[in-house]
View 1 (cartoon, rainbow, N blue to C red):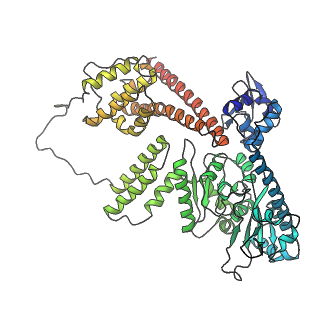
View 2 (view 1 turned 90 degrees about the vertical axis):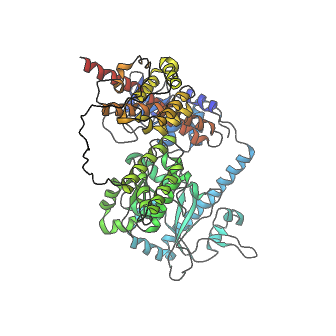
View 3 (view 1 turned 180 degrees about the vertical axis):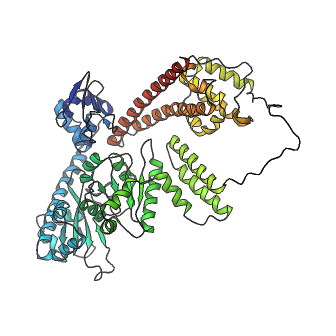
Length: 618
């Protein structure tokens, strides 16, 4: 379907957001808005607001934000197109028709859903029958109660190679093969894929059965058979785009504010059996980019909880490597390391659910895990070993696409490396040969070249985009050591902002050639014109402590560089709409939200500095 941004904007304009949200959430009028206790997290005081004029909702407690489409996908768990169709029907709009090929594919998928649904009913019935005795005994040994067995749809596939074919005889052989239920081999009769296995259905986000996983029951009798066997990729099932148990975990994650990723579906069920419902698992592959995006639609910082053995740690690092290029503001991964040789089920059995809850409450950050893994990857006895550690860390950093996050990771990891590789040496007492008095000589402040100084003066006189930018440039001239500190962020900012970029580039080039004794300010022969809002910015106040001024300036630089970065990311998200409409719309909404929040932070920054100055003056 060709859903253009213009058509979606028209749909939003014709939709009264408060009416959509009011069906399931009690709203109270609050001026020109509506308010309620947030449905995405537990609270007693309303912090959830709905604005019909602007067409979005926002929670000041958990930061949930979105439009009518986002409400239906996040709060009600509807797929993107289903949400669009429901809103379009209510607004009296016609959804652009799919092309004939798309309609044919959709009809084909519908018929395959019938096959997988019928297979699931048959597997579940087998588990309850005489043939399912061994499978039921296994479930009993695992401690799965009857409610969990029913909820997760456990079943059993008999040993007979043709039993499913006979049971689902109403479906043609090609359909059974295409659904992944049967295997065809050249010059041989097709046979059932799953035999003598405990069966588990795999669902899509709408709760429909799209594939199966089977665990072998008699591994000793079949030593060459895989312990776990999943359906192949089919028109219904793409294992790289599917997370096991997501349709159950997503509603639970909206309540708890967390989602947990474990290695296999039996781990996810073990957590559910212990009362932790927000667990999902990849399906026989390392966590993919698509699966990470699915997780980020639920929470901003999913928790990876992999086994404590070497294989589990390698799986965590593979996930980290996939996530690094995708990192964006506020979105990352957390990692829990289980005790060596234990999976979640082992830990719960031996130490109780409280043990794993304690681990989940204090996960490691992605950056901490990356540092610890690479530091422990090999010996670090020689300079060459240590140089290898630095090279590996920087190689990881270079894969990060977001310039601000890449700069912050680089700075943090290099600081850790320096502290490790160059520990401080014992200080030796220094005795001057000849006595001297403090203050006898002072090195003059460094002076910029005339052409650079002229350009700075023009910028400060009004050439920059706004007064805030001019104030930051004045602060960098006063504290040039901060130019070096924020070099990467300022370079990226200069590349994005054509108005101020040349000035920043000149400043970056000039500071490389200056000798900066004692963090001295840059001296200009004619000086700089004072920014009109000088009183609003503590870093320009001559009377403030230099350390406090530098921290204030660092906050201002962060606000300055974030705006063009968000604008650039918004343009990129809009450009990929044709390839990924659902992801593009969600990303645009998130970025617009962050731009609004950034503008508010800029306003508050100025007001806060002005208030602080007023208090000082009084």
